[in-house]
Length: 222
Image (tube, rainbow, N blue to C red):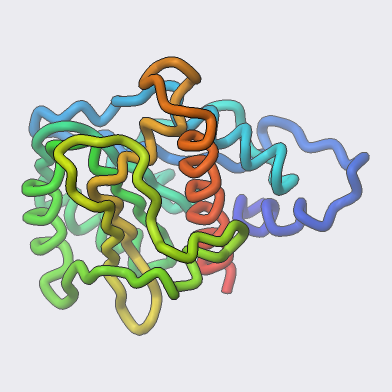
C-alpha cells in the first residue's frame, strides 16, 4: 500500500489495529557527496519518528532509511530529510532526480547543521532555476499544522547569534523544499544530553518536526 495513504488511514484507525513494521511509514535521509556529514545527528530521526508515533498515531518505523537522490525507491517516501555541517555536491543525474521527485509530490526538509548554507543554496539554484528560496512568514500553515508557532521557526541551537529563518521553494502554490537555517532542529531531536539542550528546547524542536512531517504528508495526499 502507498505509505502516504496508509499513514493517513492510521490516524483514524482503531487503536486495536495492528500495523507491522513492513507497513510502516518512515523518513528518508538523503545521502550526498561533497564532503558534508550527511549522517550527522544519528539519534535525531528515530526520536522524531517515535514522537510522531506516540503523538499522532501514525504507524512510523523505528528508524529512517538512507537514500541517494537517484535511488528508485525515493518516490516511496513523502518526507526527505538532509542535514550536515559541510559541502553538498549533487551530480547532474541527482539534480534531475531530485527535481522530478519534488515536482511529483515529494518534500525535502533541509536542516542546516551550521556549514551547509552556501553549497545548499548553490545546488537549489541549479535544481530550481525557475524558483528561488523565499523566507516563510510565521502565518504560513506549516507553523500551525499540529502545534502552534506564532513566531515561526524556533531557535534550537546557538551558533553565531543570528535569528532562525525558514525558507521555502514553491511552485504553483505547493511547497517543495523547507529549509531551516540558524535553527538546527536536528540537534533538538537528538537524545537527551547530546547537546545539553533544555527539555523545553527539545520539546520545541520535536513539535516543529511533527508539524513538518504532517504538513508534508497532507500536502502529498491532497
